[in-house]
Length: 450
Image (cartoon, rainbow, N blue to C red; front, top):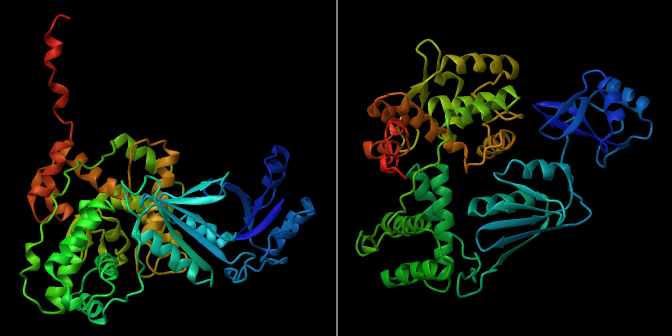
């Protein structure tokens, strides 16, 4: 049996780990305020000397995890280890689709991994995996760099060079300072700044030996052809690359739009968004036990919010008297109002009394805004618990909100206002998803005597 200090639901607790044994579990239940957590799959007790002494009395052989104190101090905040046994982190990018990760064992690292969307622990191989995105790779490298680890990042192509070519150049060439300054002066969102800088960094490192001012339109097209034919990038990433390049030559260098405006844009693949049924949404919400987590998902679904809009909500944005939620500076720097559900208001009041947020509506355990990745992790765990087989993300709740309103007869113009769409064409996509009225239509086969 092992005991270790953890932070769970903003509370310091002692986690108790042991091979499953019904008798031991029964004894632990007798301890004051002993609880079972589905999140960490373990029993935990208060982080106090009295609780710890009671545990030692029941189980004298209990071992204290490394880097934990023998005498619990409820006022002490745990700090990550800076001297692990191994000092190497290995990141493998497989076919630009999946990331495999190995790192020195530490509980704080494992807790971090569980905040990244769609994480998976491979027990046999002793490694973690995540879907590939530039943001996740960057987040992993930034996190482990804080602990002075040696980080080895590899691109591995398992499909052969004739199918997808891995990147064969580094990122040694730094972004021009003026590029970063212009992005900030243009007041682009953090996500847009991150996307532009990552995309433009790839471009300038492809032409690492060329002066940027001498790069021609033909050079840019050749680079895009390389990305499409060799690295098989998506059309959305191609658009991001083009935007990041145009921003430099047109905004930073104050160049004319021509010739860079002539670069062909890829046709964006038209895909209908996945939508959850009302029954599936209910199952997901009902499988969330933590009041803060439940309040977050309820807020996103009931008001049709983007995840960035949810984390940017402040307490003052909840107008309970008018039953409205004010979303400030949303996509396109637009403000709008959305619905404040009566049921949501009940949960928000319970959550507020329990957690007492100070500025932001949803705050992390040490204050400040709640993170996007934490909300994705909450949603993923809830989907798993609810046995949802559809491919769904937190953004699926926004799509479901719009579709459910349409199915219940809400005018498309009102849905457009609630979602903050500039064009009605964007909102009309939900008319292709709803099944309202379809049940009245019969297949012509039903009229045949076969």
